[in-house]
Image (cartoon, rainbow, N blue to C red; front, top):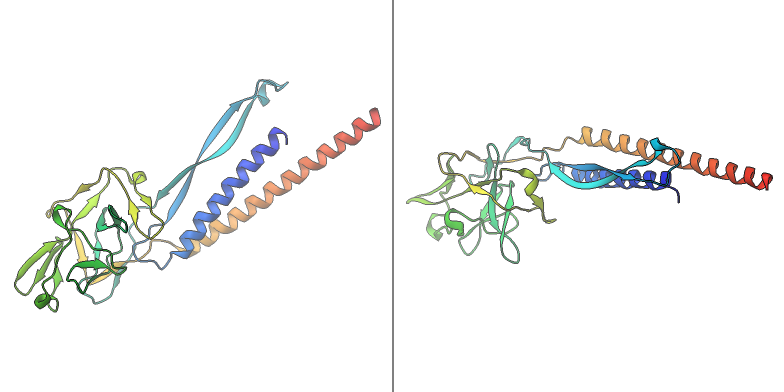
Length: 247
């Protein structure tokens, strides 16, 4: 293939990456606490010294640089469950990740395990202050409530506090593939900095109409790329035919 074909191929690979991200956004339009992703691409310019024309020596390719999260909060969805919470503002709840370590989530649908530990709806233990799981005594599970500072109140008083971890750079927070996020360099907010809204959860911030429009644009861009590729192939064929006649 010549350089033009490689450029088109890099563009089509970028379009495929965009489509994968948009499709994932659409699939999670109902997922609690999900934040839509947006792919990021960089331009890579290669100096081709072999080109006969100076203007054609710099060739621009498309490189996949990664994805960033849309940090806009989703809407508050009332559930009536006093253990369900939505984080108001930036930050994530810390949970014990499968296989060890710490993962982060904005999905605040919580429950009490049979062992008495507070966990997400998927059964992952929620970490409170000092990075330790929060244990609820069996005789206080019926009257639990969570205030706006994250303090879990039982019938006999405070039982622990949900902590919210923020990251200075959201690009450092990456999906694990299981609905959880990983990140380094996070800072735990103090009780005075924490704001939670109990009795409901944060819905996905994905707008299906916007994502559907993005899909249509991606398909049109891909069709244009294919037409350009066909035009280049026709041009090569005509050039070869002319060279054959000259020979």
